[in-house]
Image 1 (tube, rainbow, N blue to C red):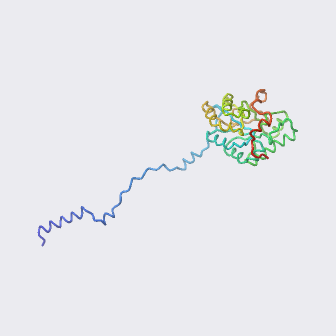
Image 2 (tube, rainbow, N blue to C red):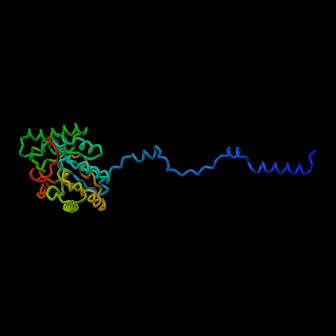
Image 3 (tube, helix red, strand yellow):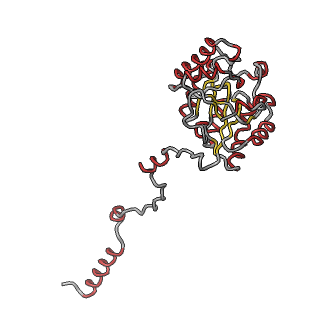
Length: 288
């Protein structure tokens, strides 16, 4: 029989074993882990749908709109212009020459894919009034075909080179079931090739439902476009394609828009009158 002293020693040893775990037991204890760092909320299908949802069309009957139109393209700077338009959520109307669609079909295709409007500006930019009816049809029909081949869509509007019209051109447009687009404000970018001058000229001519004549082969036009779009938006303008403007929807074949623009004697100072005025900045590197 154990003495009281022996019993006391056994009790002390038992307490020590409970209070001080062995190394083997300690290894089995769960190791504390760092608190996980919060992560960004995963993107849900609903979020993706919201981000991919198309922007609602602008109602120009309710807000102030303006259309920037670019002739003689696709020009060699058109890709940079398209980047800017995309960044500032703006739409434009491009009046394409068939010979340059042949040179740069990818640019023309991108214009359509990104929701811009495309028009027929002839194949070689001649003075249509100097051509026979057969040649006028050839210039316009050839461009319709090559634009459709490059983009999958036909041009929906015609802008005659230099804005020159006569009854024959209008009759052919009517036969083709396409309206005619002129303009009611200019940039004179082809003449000045100066960023400040282009910026000031456009803002001077800006008005509600304005159709501004510009050129995507003028490098200075493309360079000043970010500044110009910001200025227009600050003035409350939505930059849209021509077909979004008031009065431009459902135009009859051969009809001229803006209404009465063909009677404006000052209109044509905004456009070059000869090819030589455009030769310093060719719209294509290798036209054919």
